[in-house]
Length: 157
Image (cartoon, rainbow, N blue to C red):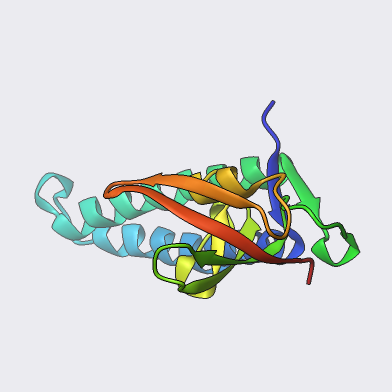
């Protein structure tokens, strides 16, 4: 079975989403189906079909979240240390062509959000950084060609 690495914050966010789906969305959809059913002929009832479709989506997401949470490998980044890049590290890099600095935390797939500075451990740039240390250079294949970066800092915060 595949384990899903995630930070403590990412695990809490998935649990919160699951709780919301079960306690808010699921009852709302059940009620919407009941109301639509009361309108009569189900074969031509758009509200009923829309509610059933949404029910399928929500139930699928609930199953997905339950599975991921059951297989979660929760990693407390605050208890980590080291000078090489690994899951949970916050890495400051510089683009060797443009001298533009970027800062990313390497997190699980469900937590990734580039706008928040969080990239998935499975992303090409994270895979290229793993096991590297401060001062190390690495290359990432991008649609426009290879891009070179250098690691300026590795932190666990």
